[in-house]
Image 1 (cartoon, helix red, strand yellow):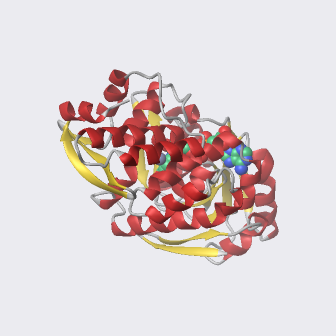
Image 2: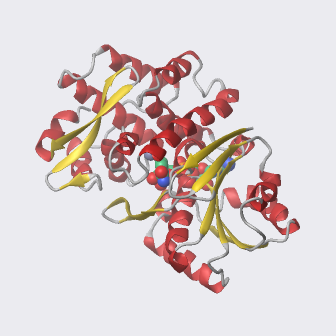
Image 3: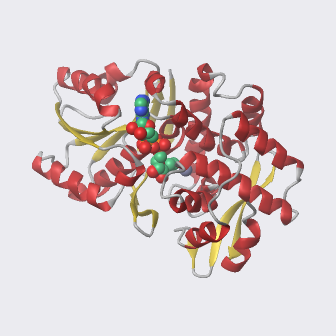
Amino acid sequence: MDTIHIQASTDYDVIIERNSLPRIAEFLQAIKPACSVMIVTDDNVGPLYASTVSKSLETAGYTVHTYTFPHGESEKNGHRLMDLMETLGQAKLTRKDLIIALGGGVVGDLAGFAAATFLRGIDYVQIPTSLLAAVDSSVGGKTAVNLDCGKNLWGAFKQPILVLCDPETLSTLPKEEWINGCGEIIKYGFLGHPELLDQLRERPLLQHPKDVDTIITQCVRIKAYVVEVDEKESGLRATLNLGHTFGHGIEHGSAFTIPHGNAVALGLLIMARGAVAHEELDPTIIACIEQLLIAHELPTSTTISRDLILEEASHDKKASGSSITIVVPTGYGTSVLKKVKFEELAAYCIL
Ligand SMILES: NC(=O)c1ccc[n+]([C@@H]2O[C@H](COP(=O)([O-])OP(=O)(O)OC[C@H]3O[C@@H](n4cnc5c(N)ncnc54)[C@H](O)[C@@H]3O)[C@@H](O)[C@H]2O)c1
Ligand SMILES: [Zn+2]
């Protein structure tokens, strides 16, 4: 078992342990006495794991409700949020009660945002079941839904009270979702962790899935450090957006047919090419990134137009006024934040 303690506006543990799901009540009881719980999940994950969670909780005296919605990024919207809010109200959850997000990043972001504002905020727990959620979205307290005009534009910071990751749940995760998670994992390597890049090059995760437990722990440790230093993203945390400036453009521009982690990986490669053009990155690193992406079956090109990617990037919420802060890879395992004018951004977008 690995436990990573996070000190933020709420202190909490991220527990990574195989077969912990049927024992969730054991972990929860220590921090939250029996109460009403709304398990929020999607129609892929719910049928697989919701009964395991509710059985453990009910045996320990919790009252359990379940809200299941259709899977997919397109459900992470204001209409779905409203429906969830009404359901929380109908179930008469009080401020002492709890929401559990059981699923991938879509479930986590939606349920977390509901927890941030229902009754002006109630506790929630993240149970990530996708690789992407395990290594990234379940930790750090960023919650949001999408607006028609862009991703994650309506949201709040709200830390969970516990993250319980049972890597056993990844046994049912489709291969394309493993690939998707690898996009964010490679990103972490460029945030000061060349050793992670070395490992992924020598032992690509897709071919060595047993490495996943230690990789989740490594990534959560990296993210935990960043969140502790800069919870509300006034500086260092923005580095986690590496690959995301163009990645969000690709994701949104493809009407979400290119999933988040794939788009982030490609966004990283595009930005790296831009960095080479600006003489900020050694050109040999491009081949290294391409090799990593190919080894993890991630895309290295797109048919989405450069104009569309740039247009979408201009809606990016990291933009302020006429400039935007981008994350530029500067070496094998390193990146820096850089503020550029919108007109300068195009020179970084090299497909
Ligand atoms: N809050 C953050 O800090 C943060 C960080 C990164 C990404 N995100 C968000 O996360 C989302 C992407 O997350 P995701 O890739 O997990 O997407 P997702 O939640 O849509 O999950 C991907 C697919 O896998 C299925 N699934 C999940 N776990 C499963 C399991 N164990 N077995 C079988 N199927 C399973 C889901 O039903 C879904 O179809 C995006 O909306 C992105 O913006 C948020
Ligand atoms: Zn991301």
